[in-house]
Image (cartoon, rainbow over all chains, first blue to last red; front, top):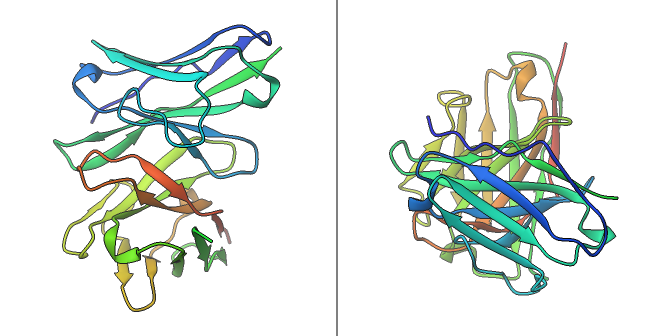
Length: 108
Length: 121
C-alpha cells in the first residue's frame, strides 16, 4: 500500500522558517492535505489540495507538492505553532486514506 | 454552533463490542461525506472508515475491515461506528470528521473532540 514518510521531528527558532516534508512515490500526482494537532486537541486542517489555506489559517502557512515530496512551510514561526503535523492523501487504487506518521515541530 | 460531537466510548474486554456515535449540528448533515479516524495513545493518525453522502459507498481501513461497520442516519444527523471483535490494538481516541468536498480526494475540514475506546481485560 501507499506509504507517506515524514521526519519525526523538526526544530526551529522563533521567527525562522520551518519546512516539514512528506515523501511518497509520485506524490506530486496526488492531492496532499496537512493537519496541525496540539496536545489533547483534535487535528485542524491547515492546508488542503497541496497549497490552499482554509479560512482562518494564517498566511504564514503554505504548501507545495512536486515529484516525490510535498512540503508544509511555516514562515515566521511562533511558539504557538509547536504541534504535531500530519500529511494525508487518498490512495484511489485501493480506496483508502493514508496519513503520514507525523512530525513534531519544536519551537526552540 | 457548527460542530461534531462523538459519544459512546468506554472500556471493553477483548472480543467485545462498542457503538460510537457522532452527532452533527449547525450545518446540513445530508450534504457531506464523513469519516472516522483514530489515534492510539502517543501515536499518529490512522484512518478507519468512510461513508458517502447517501451511504451507498463505504470504505474501510485494512485493520478494521470485517469487524467495524460505518453507517449514517439522516433523521438523527448522526454518524455511527459499530465495532465488533475488539482487540487491544483498537485502543485509541476515535474522531469523526467531515469531508470538505465530494471530490474523492477530500480533506477533512471539521473534526469532533474525540471519544476514547479502551480494550483491555
